[in-house]
Image (cartoon, rainbow, N blue to C red; front, side):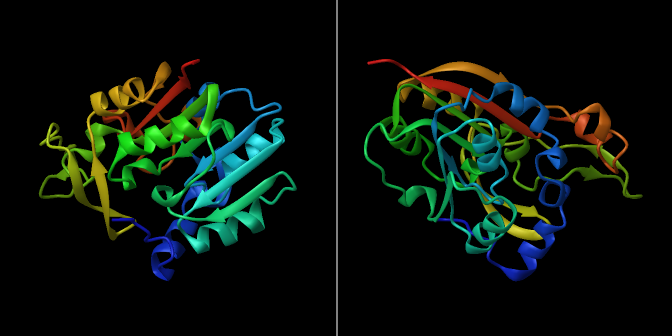
Length: 245
């Protein structure tokens, strides 16, 4: 299936109230770690898959990319991206990631933020990205961490008084779809192991360059609930490079 809750009016309204929606990259807890892993964009042609509001597209353009293509399945997301992050070097395209088709060696960099856990077939996606990238091209993406997606509910266990006890991790090796709750709404996501992500890259013709499990930055620790985010990883960032032919 191709998950697209973001064109639902109520869901999109809730998403628009998140700090990452209102504050951009500065409001995303993983940004400090992702920024350190991103490649040099100067002179590069960049593809951002699942670009959302276009924050990363604008960052790439502002840091020297000659062209950036941001794609997303959500019409509402792209409308906002064009309002908040327009640039002569950025083009936005409405499309599910699974439906994208480009000539071989079209891009120098492919990036994606928190979108691939909506895609059922990760190895097939990696194979297509490998064809789109030039040899030596960079591929950097973030996803929800496998320990976060394993059980499915993506919520804590609480005691009778509503206090957090622990975060459930179960059925880790049973990969596949999960019914989760995000912003109080039901969504379908796909759980896969850390091995699946890394082997998908290695078998897809990439070399692994870096890996991060970002913790909340110190300046966000006073926000409600943020200290509890230190109790389990929520996100995973991987950086890879297409092997030279």
